[in-house]
Image (cartoon, rainbow, N blue to C red; front, top):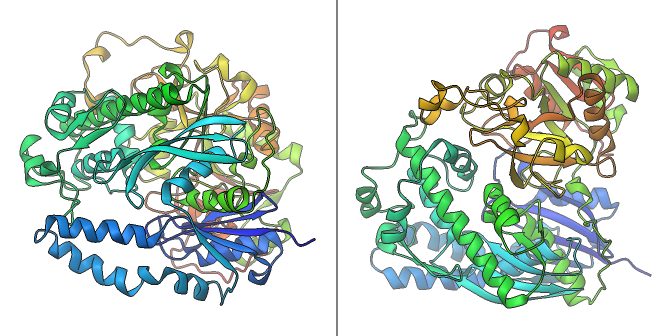
Length: 609
């Protein structure tokens, strides 16, 4: 009997991706940016498709169905109606976007088939928030659950609520364009001087340094928020309908001046703005969750869409919301739409039954990307002239634990790459969380990013409650929770007088490298079942030091995607102050290597494992 090979695609807006399902099981999934090395790459995911097919051991001729994550014609309808509704103010924006839509995006069917090498099989389309909803519910560990999706905008919807039962889901209500929680947050991202669609993480990280001084202004002038979480935005203060920016002159006047120029010094104003929009966002998330709980009466909630990556808001939903359990799609943004549409085809179109393992999701730890055989890695290292050692597994774990205990920073490249924006121990930079110097060293000498950016802890799942007020697993680093009170260090009287970024270097707990200034942390719980190597590394560190936690940040530098290949990892290792590099069974130490030459190039064609 022929297998059902379903290829899901997201593309042409930002963060394009591909996913392969075989008989309902996720075989592979990856974002295009990891291969192209263009952050947030929106182009057709040719490399990601090639990888998925190779991982599945098939060609495009073996694909039975292809799915696209949204409906371009509906999206064009929304864009056209928007331009007509604000004419003639939107003419300049229309001149930029209109021809592109007519030339390219209205012919998505033709272009997709051509990009897939003349694919002649079934090509199906789902609505954007249906794809998000499917990616949230179908891989979840729940037989039934409420669903909440929130992002910038799909075709017309900007948020949706629904319910999933068994192999079916239904959307119940939606919030529609131009009222969007994602775009409200992006407006403040733009105004505080960060890049829209990638800088939202920075706003969330900056928020604890500020005070919620502008919350009432937001409620009074920018939005009319209702009890059920729905709202309307006052478009007088925004410019995304008719212009090329997010905010209008009225917005600038309301908040006391023009947007911050990117890369200039941050002031208390930006911190207060970040805190204010974060507070508002959390309130909207809570109201939406309460509303869908009231409507469905269910105990489980599944989340997806770009706003579901707001792990601070997710933490509040868990602690204060009406649901007993949450599950958040690790690739909650548009990349996850590729997975969602593939699952809609499997369960809705093909009527494939869904199997749920109690307490266990179907994402395989999000380790769905490529891995590399030791032989290919060693061949590359020989060509580069790198100095390396090959260690057996136990010796590797012991050596790494000792290096971490000596405050060495390690690039850890091992196994299959993660799907989604978080590094989860396969493409990670790790360090000792007990070191008060670790955050500054990683931010400034390795990540080359703003010093205020917090780092996340990876903790052995069964020991998480010893460190954090968290009573559930958090395998995908999508929940923020408080550090346990007994681990906190009270601030001296002099330190209590500090404001804003001056609070950065105050030691707040016995794990200072992962404790944010509000005594919180963005937690990844690690189980042996999903990543045995990473689990055993942390276990070795615990055996040596008594600490079951390591610092975990993504293996990349600012402005670049997370590394994909051994070549990417080696280049990042040599260009930064990372002390040691693990490439599968091989260990490289910086002090052993020849001087790095920026123009170094290699002919590397890795055979995927």
